[in-house]
Length: 357
Ligand SMILES: [Zn+2]
Image 1 (cartoon, protein in one colour):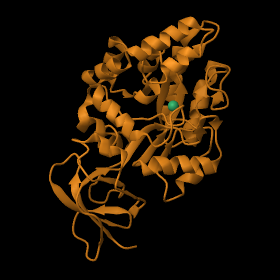
Image 2 (cartoon, rainbow, N blue to C red; image 1 turned 90 degrees about the vertical axis):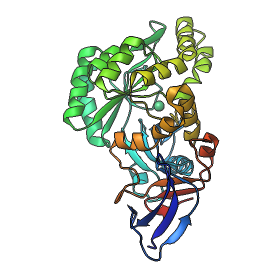
Image 3 (cartoon, rainbow, N blue to C red; image 1 turned 30 degrees about the vertical axis):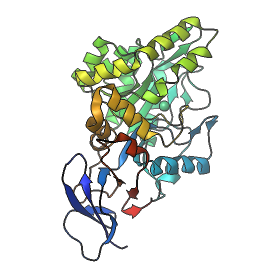
Image 4 (tube, rainbow, N blue to C red; image 1 turned 45 degrees about the horizontal axis):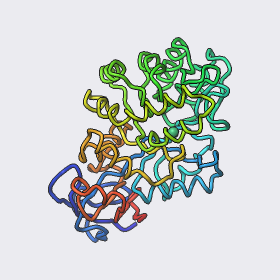
């Protein structure tokens, strides 16, 4: 394979420098006879979509060929490392395709009967069985397990936690013993203390965060992936929940303060990362929109881009563009720190050392 050469400002740095790529890895010292594929612009370590669903479409689970197209769409938008936050589909065959983004699989969502979207996850009748189910998903996945933390309880007519605190403690301990981290879907307030105190590693959405639970996350270093694009769907969810007025009102209230909630979490020092929730009612390939939304919610451009690149890579255990690192990077014509719109149109995408765009 021919060596590649790229020259540009490597974010978050300020001065241009040269990079070479040999056998899929970054080299920082000159390599002779390299083919220059990028020579004047801005380079960003491969973008990370920290909340994505490869294998879920608008109408539910999809087949592998459609899942591959979803992954291609995300890749062309610059997302080269995807934390798949739960999928009904076994996407391991996609991990073998060198032209598709790296996928960190969380396996299947763990929920209870009638307490999540039908057909997507594993439904557990008795919460006492949660630790065993978590162990099974930890063995099957790539280091993450996804719980549904709360959902509408139709007998109450509002959001409510799925799991008692003791089941969460045992389940999260089981995951950690198996070397996996745990995250949970949470919209409301009430499920958060139990999850955070049980030592969960990350919260998805987190629209119900309050000053107390924000402080608890900051103290423990619990991450937050706020999926701001998803929260824009809350008014629609409320509108279609006619039989459950308390739930509808709750969703509208969570939506109304969603941006403030994220800003408060950022301000408190909660580690926040970019996730689109593609597949969860959101189209694939929208990572730029999430970065721009995060920038406007208290992060500013540099940290928002980091939340979808170098910071998120470090959190997931992947290096950025250092000597010997995997050559996954995205090139832009102008500086996305000053013109965030350019994030929508990557000029060059290099994945595993190959030019894919
Ligand atoms: Zn999701």
